[in-house]
Image 1 (cartoon, rainbow, N blue to C red):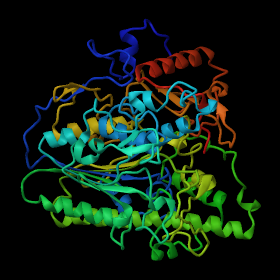
Image 2: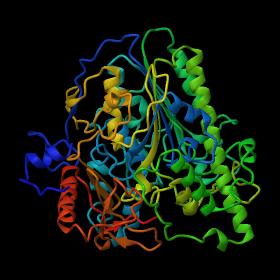
Image 3: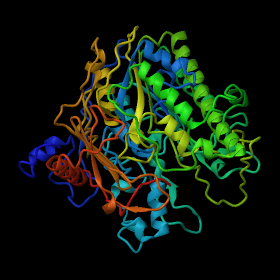
Image 4: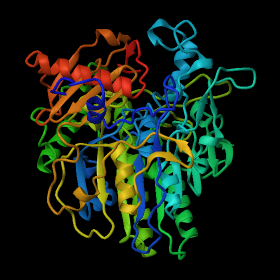
Length: 611
C-alpha cells in the first residue's frame, strides 16, 4: 500500500483481487457476487493427477520436525523429501474462515464465514455494547444477520469439490467440515443458537462420499460416560446426520478418518477416473486426547519448560534455513506464569498437556504415513499431488466447555488425555508452537495467527526442491488445484447463478520450477484479512497490522494502533516502523478501508485479544 489511490474506481479494484458486484445484483446485499465456473473442462485422462489435501487442525508453525520441532513427524517430513517446503503460507486466523476460503478461493467474508457462526450467535445472545454491531440493542439481531455471517458456506460460491466433480474427479472427504450452520435464535426445541444447514453439508457441495464432524470441535474418542460437553457433537456420513453417541465404541478420530478415506479411495479403483481426497483431520485441536501408548512415548520430553523448548526449536529452524526473514524472533506475550514461576504441581500439569499434544501430532503423522503407504500399495502415489497444511496458528485458548446438563469433565492428572477429559495446552505452549512468530490462533494481525506450515509434493515428483519463501494465501490453493487438474478457473457464473470469482493465484508453475522461488503475487498486489476487529494488509515487503495484545480485558478496535513492519526481514514483528513512514502508513490504512468495502466486512467494536 505505497501509492495513494489514483481514483476510487477500477484502479482500486485491480489492486485487490476482489470481485466487484455485477450490474443487476442487489447492491445492498452483503454477500452477492460472481464466481462462475466455466465447466468446459478437460476430459478424464489417466495422466490427470489425483489430489490429496491433508489439513491438520490448530497445528502450529513449528510443530513438525521438518519445521524445527522435537516432535518426530517422519511421514509428513518425507513428503518434503520428494516435494517442497513453503515457509510463507497464510490462512485465516481461525478454522471455519480458513476452510471457507480453501473450498472456494474467495475471501471468507464473501464465502459466508465473516466470523465463526458460533461467535456471531454468542455475540447476539450476550447483547453487550462491546459486541457491537451484534445484538438486539446494537445493529444485527438473529432476524437480520448479514449474508456473509450466517455460518455456512455461501450458495454464491462454487466449491472445490463441485468444480473437480464437474471435471470428472471422484471427490471424497473425511474430518472436520465446520461450514454448515444456520445462526438462529434459540427456541423451545433448539437451545443453542446454531442449527445444522443440511444443504451446506459436504454431500450437497460436491463430495461423492463424506464422513465429517459438523461442529468446530469435539472429543477424539467416542463419548464417555457421563459425556463431556465436547461429546455432544454431530456428525454426517453423506446425507445422514447423527450424534456422536452413535460412533463406534473404539472410535479415535485420526485413525477412523484415515480408515474411512482409504475405503472411499478403494471404492472407485480401476474406473480410470482421478480422485480428489480431502483429509481434514481434527487433531491436534483440543480436547487434547490420544491413545495411551502415544502419550507414554512423550514422557518427560517437556519437563524443561516453555522457554527451553522454544529456544531449541528456533535453533533447529535456523539450522534448517527457515529463518531467512526473521532477524529477531517475537518476544513472549503477556500471559500466564513463566515456567520458573510455576509450582511443582503446575509444572506436572503443563508438561503433561504438551506431552498429550505431541502424542496427537505423532499419531497424526503415523496415520498420514498409512494413507501415503496405501497410495503406494495401489499404484496411485506417483500420480498424486499431495498437500499438507494447517488451518491456522496454534490454539492458545482454553477448551470451550458450555454448561450442558448431565455432562462432566475429569481433568485430573491421571485422566488427562483419556476419554472424559477436556484439556487444552494454553498460551505458553502455543507460543512454542508458533515460534518464531508473534501470538497464535485468533490473532489475525500477528504472524503466529495466520502462518501455517505447507508441504507440497507434485504428481510425478521424486526429489525435493529448494524451500520457497514466497508469500502465498489459502485462496491460492483452489486455482493451483484447478490448473493441476486441467480445469479452467471459474468466471462469475456457475450452473445458472451469479457467484463470487476466486481471487487467488495458481502457483503450480512456481512449484514446477527446479530452483527456489520468492514470488507468487506481484509486489503491487494487496493481500488482506480481518477477523473480529483484528486485521492486516500486505503489499510487497510491507505489513500493516492492527492487533491488540493478549489480555483478559476487552479492547476497543478504535483504540488499537496500526503498526507497520518490513516483513522481508522482520516476520517476528519486533520493529514497528509506522512513525518513520507516516505517508506509507496512511496509504496502507486507506488500502485497508478499500478491503473492508470490497469484502462487505462488518467491523467490530472490540478487537480480538484472546478468549
